[in-house]
Every structure is written in structure tokens, then in C-alpha cells.
Image (cartoon, rainbow, N blue to C red; front, side, top):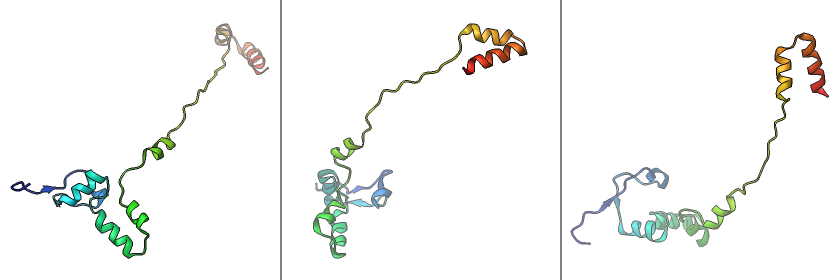
Length: 114
């Protein structure tokens, strides 16, 4: 629109996209990012890849941001039911151990190994 100042890049994700904070945002960059979910500099990146010999499909795929939902769903883990059992002696045996002498300790230790 006429009369509006140009937009500027801001935010924590700029480094991941190779953008400079405060740099001017072009209309084409906005269209690529928000309209097509592609890298704001997709045109340049695609052109560079094609110049390096990449095929067009690979060059275009390199500029797509995000992941298809199918890929995200495939990585989800299926929950499993697991049971954990802890075996311990009856309370009366614990009291016997606590109040017993060395001979009683030996007998109860021997019995618990069986």
C-alpha cells in the first residue's frame, strides 16, 4: 500500500533463516513465507541450487519450511502399558528383623533367600 513504511525483520528465528534483524521485508518475501510456507529467500536459494546442478524438484523442496503432517504423525510413539511389581516381606517379618538378635537375623535372611 502506498504511504506505509516497509516492514522489518524481527524475532528469534531470523538466524535459523539466515535473515538479518532490522532488514527490510519485501512483498515477495512475505508472499513466500506466509502465503507459500517457503523460505523468504526461496527464489535466490532455488536459483543457486539449480546453478549448482540440482534438479528443479530438489531445489524447490529445499526451500519448503516445516514438515508434512504425515511425517510428524509417523514419529509419534505408541504408549504401552507396563506393570512394575515390588516384592517385600510381610510387616511381621520386618518387625522380627528389627527386634531380633544376630541369630534371628541369620534365620530370617536364610528364609528370605528361599
